[in-house]
Image (cartoon, rainbow, N blue to C red; front, side):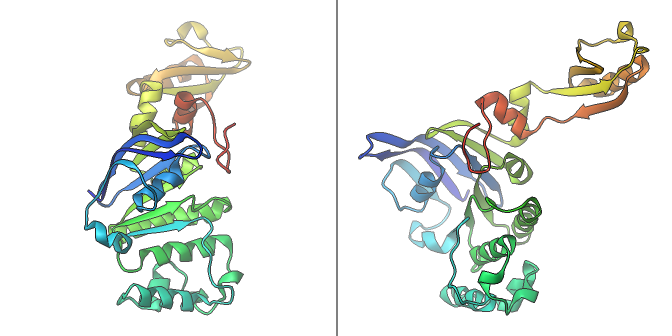
Length: 297
């Protein structure tokens, strides 16, 4: 266990309200945990408490000596700021020296496919390249937990996928745990071993992605197909909904093959067996969507 948060509450006394109320969760070794929630849900406030930058009620315990908090936990945000005229090699070397690491600039840059940018100025890098450097800096010195606060916000789809693959690579090679906050539910589904959903400072839901999807839909999946006038509705064994020339069936996963075969026998075509996503589950259980900026819609 790397981190355990137990009944943590954080109060804003000037506003006379709780920013976080009785939050509890844990992070295991070599795992990725994501915190999801709208702007103002308490995600960043909770991170500040984990880093002992805020007063709180409850308990936060670590899988290492609390006095070495900043040795073993690193935080990176979407707005990492570097010296304007610094080169990539300079900032990496600075971190190596500050953290008394035996790693070299070249081997670190090679590990994230950034060695060709060694002599580039940081301000000339793309958004995705800058975030790769930010992630790299967070790994120097072998931390036990990396906290990434909305790291991919503002990046294009290709850059986001590049960062996802990099995080999985780092987790696999270094065995480091990660705590992410994100507004991208596809990102959360792709990366996370465990998810915590915060709403107005309270833990609304938590669990693995498959468990949350199953809880939302009771293990049901969706099959759709297109039909024409020859489709045999009388031979259809399952309850269905029809919209124009499209038929939809909700079914349990164990019946998937039978549903597919039945639709085919009845004359359906372009049969699609749709997988439920974490985004579907979030909308079903929470009741709203999140845009890229973390606002509800």
